Image (cartoon, rainbow, N blue to C red):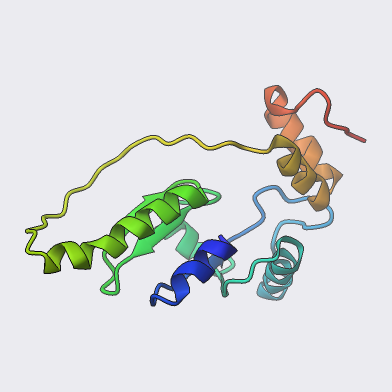
Length: 164
């Protein structure tokens, strides 16, 4: 998302990361109990994953996260007036870029005289997922995160993924 944010920033399109909570807490990144701790975790997220966009930190009770759907990795695109133009329950860079490119073409279409009427669409997209990177992230949170996930979703754990 950093590259996509950089690409569109020169066109007046802002991109923010909303830090909500630890989806898979462990002993290294335990469940959040204070805003001080939450800011520390958001800073670690920035440093570990190289998030270059501004990071907004949700309230401790996750009010913003709940208001926008509570999914673990959502993306929303809003117009300058606050109209929802795109929402996805999972961040997929190619899908976000596709939508931003589509939106960039609208002013030229209007200038050419096209009469545009909005409509909504819902579709299912597919992304490749890197299971090993996901489990490495669990391990970064701590063995408790690994064990909790494996206990909850035993069918999802790759057989070749090392566990302590």
